[in-house]
Length: 382
Image 1 (cartoon, rainbow, N blue to C red):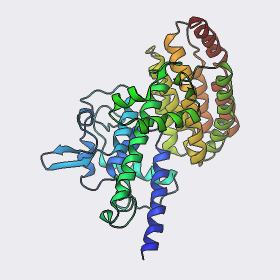
Image 2: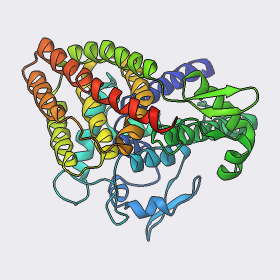
Image 3: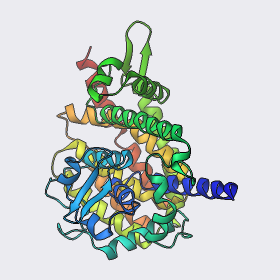
């Protein structure tokens, strides 16, 4: 009996990670999933949450939604998803956290049901029959301290290990977010003691996070100087773009023959938003809008591993765009909008060859411009 229960729990754990991985490029949807998985509040109550409610709520505390009492517990996963959402665009504190596409009204429960069906279809998890099934089987796993289907009190040590793992992940995500956004400039020294003090944690999770970042190329460690944010490298940037072309062209080729009507609709909306942001002269916001468009274009490729690798390459290239574009007065290329329109048309036509061609153009055409910015940046710091 116990063995069967453990097998089922492990399967559920993998399913939850698959869902989370699929929604990584859509932080608002990921945040909605994390909140919906908790059983102690209704979908309607969750849809009434405003941005300011999460701003003012501490981690591992219950969010007070209505006069009826406590709402969901703000788990590390919920807090991380909210932080990722903040990085993707400007949010007004009075906004509903989950707004409809039409105006500023809150999302409806019908729209949520439709969203959940889409998530399950695109991750091949249609064995779950809606929200109630997800809550019953995946909900307990989503809460800190629940690592098995057994009695949580039977193994107190397991709670500590999960809690520690969550702290490590939080520290890692905060560090990588600051590097990707350009808040930590290349070459800046990263003191584990200072970072630990600012985050109010011990130095152990900070050092572990820095080691993970070093393995991914975001930081370097020098015997005498300690940890440093990695310097921008011309050759490394070209290598990242080369890998992006290989993986992303394959992803969009697969997606072109499998794309759904929902994805095409979301992609068209993302393109309209990209064109709107392009008029605002905010290169950082434009980069984020561009990333959302690309991840939507690939999401029907049917390969979670490929999408994860593509996201990692975007993370690696982000500091180049964020820092260079933010510091440059040189007019940026305008071809991206046309490329995006051609990509949308190719996906609408289920044409993988056209989709690959215009995607490659979109990635490679701005290279000379970015390398020109890089040379200007390199001279400015000599």
